Image: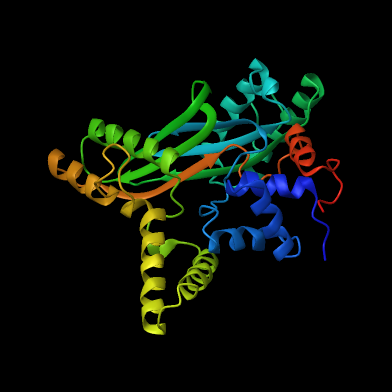
Length: 314
């Protein structure tokens, strides 16, 4: 049996919101497998659906830039939030966001792009690391473009103009007036920042994610003890709910919590007398998917369990 450390209990607790003893039991039941432990907690109703973002780990900034019917978003990481507030670092994020408009979402092309004042983006980043004295990385970028309409950006928890902890782009295609598209795009971007949809439509959700959710739904339904035909209906109901809650167009708009986003877009188009189609979106949250460094909370969990931070939990 794998050793269950206080650090792993702490990580599971952060990712699921479940109690410490439940996390310890889940890891024991799954031989220390973190993802399996998350699923075990969910089958017992002890954890909410885990979206990959969770509590973010890396510091730095997400930057956005829009030009005409094209928008770009980048994530630049640093070791500490102190550097994210540094003017030199922010200037780099600002310039790289603009350069990303020409990189077509290709991170390597962006690194090789010419930086204002000489050299490439990657060379400028290396120079910043040397002068600021802290490791930094240009992690990812994305681009949205429409032939007619607007790409609208929004930054949540802004540290400066067009950069912050969450960056969102919304692509609206159609003939509606520019001010209508801009206002609608801003509202939709704020919704996306808050609701964190996983895809535009239910059919676009990751098949692997759907299979994982289905397996959890089947196990939970089987525990009800109901006949097989009822279990099947319970599973299909759970999956329909999952698709609805995680696809942008079927989510309830955060502004009123009752109107599906698809209807909000249709209503705006009708009111404007033009056409509007929500074509795509991008949401970057700082540090999502990056393993978080251990902090003093691990020691708190260990103390509660009566062990040292990196010792196995009995």
